[in-house]
Length: 190
Image 1 (tube, rainbow, N blue to C red):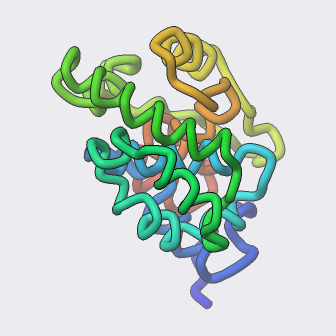
Image 2 (spheres, one colour):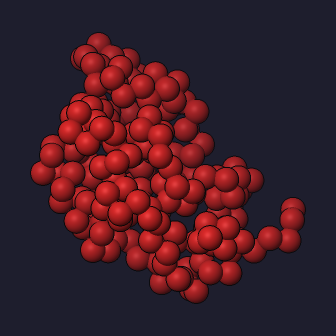
C-alpha cells in the first residue's frame, strides 16, 4: 500500500484502486472504448460499480471486444446467448440497449466523424474541472448530463438517463470529479 491520497470510493479493493488510479477520469478519445464504457455504465444502473468492474473482462469477451459494428448487428440468437452468459449482467433490456446504442454510435460517426467528436463537442474538447473537497457533495447529475441525456435520448439511445450519463462523463474524463485532495485530481487538472 502506498501513501497516496485517493477518493474514498475506490478504497474497497485493489481492483477498484487500480481502476481509479489509471482509468477513471482520464480523458478517453477512442470510439470503441467510449462505446465500451457506455455499455458498462448502463449495465451499472441499479448495481454497484464494483459488480460491473469485476465482470468487465467477461463483458469484453461476450460483446466481441465492443467492436461497434459487430454489436450493432447482433441478432436474437446472439441476445439469447448473452442472456445465458453468467459472466455478464443478464438483463434483456440492457443487452438490447447495448445493441441499439451501437447502432446509434454508428449513426453519430457518420454525422460527426466520430463518437468522440460528438461527446467532446459538448465541452468544446476540454475537461470540466470540478473542485470537490467533500466526496459526499459529488452530484449524481448536473446541467451537462441533463443536456447530453436529452440529446442522446432524442437520437434513440437507451439507458442514457442523466445519472448514467453523469457517471459516464466522470469515467471518460469529460468531468474531473476526483476530490481536490486526491493525487489524480492534480494529475488530471493540468
